[in-house]
Image (tube, rainbow, N blue to C red; front, side):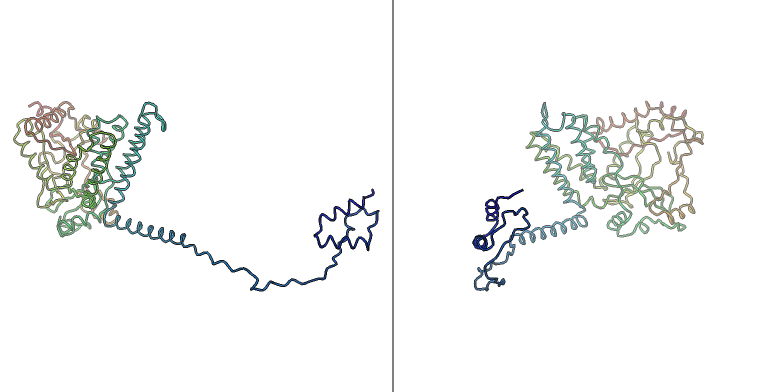
Length: 458
């Protein structure tokens, strides 16, 4: 195949520099290309200029160097972020160890209040633009508030319980969720209990109550594991050296520090919601604040207990049917209350109340009407105390009245029990004009089932 020489030359010119192009024209005259050239590999480029080695340019001919970038703005913001992180870390540690997370709990409350308010502002309408139906709106916000109250603990649980007792004005979704507010709360460690007792009495629990945790003879015993734990306090069982069994109610150590912050946060949130939704929530603040402050004063609770005992003793309809435990003032303070230990069945345990009595004839519940309580085994207590100091259950079960099968009950009449409750609360409201809220109501059998029915009718 022949190649046109003219086309080949034009093509080569396009790929040459101007100086090379001149040299190519000169070389073409000296060395003509063969017309029969067919291969590109045979092309030759002839450089006629003199070879000059590469020489770096002198510094004087170079432009002035640009100043190096110092990143002043980036360094300033990094420094600010570092200071902010250190400040937040220090504030968090101070809040956790000295303020018992009061600032963290308040910030958590404000944030959730903003989320709930925004959710209702956007979706509380006939056709919510986000988040499904009105029922879904109530469900998710009830869960949010429940989680907040349980996470913050302390007086927040008390606020939740106060809301639960007035939950009839709330949507059904809130009623269902807030009914769980009365479940047991997490208990504090024994070290916190020791510090509260030492701060109030200036003595350790062993010195003040005369108990021993290693089974020393002649001394009482005390469980370091709480029998019950509520939002503000927890209850420990103890048997004193003189044989008295007592319930020691000890306030959680962080409550005294948190109460001011919690009430302030509650006031601010209710004020904002009152303004935002035009609902008179702030009207609840004086009553709830007063109630919560009284809940943390065990001296006031002890005085109310004694007052109630005198009122019951003076009412013929209730005398012998209602019993108020004794309070031992010499072992009590504003944050510690020691009262008589009562064996009984909770009012809501319907099955245990109505099952037939399988205990001994003419003998009621343990400790009822001065009946002696069987003492715990000292050797077994010493072994449990040495082996399991954080899971002590030293109090005897005293469930012999359930029979060998363990399926017995008090054998009481629900009608008689509820009649006693109606008489008690009606006397408080209409006769005395003073109502004392009972946190725990225990039912005891005064004797066997037939004798109990006979005494109830009389």
